[in-house]
Length: 420
Picture (tube, rainbow, N blue to C red):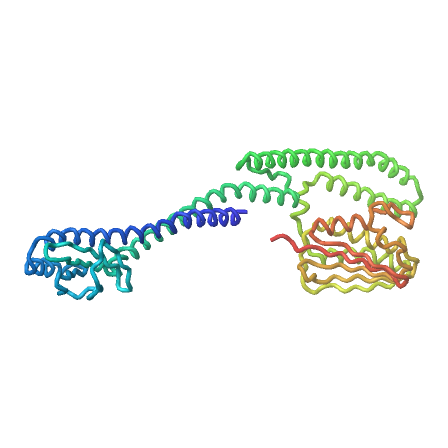
């Protein structure tokens, strides 16, 4: 926008300057010609009385006195003799009236003068250089003035464009910060009234989003907290079981309690903190694969793991990535028969970050596109597992891709690189 405004002012100023300078340049030429011809006419008027009244010797002396003038003066006497340089009239008949003759060497002013003994002719040659004296210098002055005016116009236009575009640029920066989860970002109210109105609307929207998000997170934390009472009652009931079953069920109850604590902590964690956090994808995935390998061994599933040797920092917290990996691996155990093998690969992404690929040898997903929709499940589950993984990938700046066939299903979790 700033560039377009500057170019528009440059084009407009150039047109105005051309409309002024071209006629001015033409006027300068005409003024120079008129000034040179006026000098010739003045010299001509000085000689007319002398030619009309004085003797030939006096007129010859007067002509000789003009030798230092830039204009050439000649007089053809009544007997055809030229006093001074021979003029262009030569031996031709004398004109009846004054005349102006244009030639390649300049302009000649011809004036007949009647005497008692005949007609003499005065001829004054104004050279072409005299006709254009000072024109080039004046043109350079006009051109320099036009250039200075153009530069000043561009400087003023750039300053004006900057004052107009700076609020828009700051508004875009604020919107980008809001898009990354920084709900404290606010736009400065500046610029034209229209831009100020947009800034006020963006600030109100950001405040409202913060209020709604806080209310939603508090509601989620409250709901999770309500589960503590039945969970405590369940723990008391488990205490009455036999030693063997009691230990196993108590472990499950403890795991459920830890999950509730994580839900509450996640609900009360600021959005910006979650987006800015980072972790090593290879380390987190390796830890979750070890966790699921115990169950895989009990079900007779072959597990292959291919982890990157170097750390792969990604723009997602370790807890969020662990939950996403658990959701994907949980689907493998929930929707493939026992004994179906699976593999996990963690590699560097071409765009930075990492790619987590989970492949299984199950029967495949009938509707791969529908499986990514939130709440959609063909296996009787909540249908939230892949959606959790997809939202985690998108929050990091990545994507989740699902491909399936009768030979198995492949889930590719692309994670964005960690923030510097």
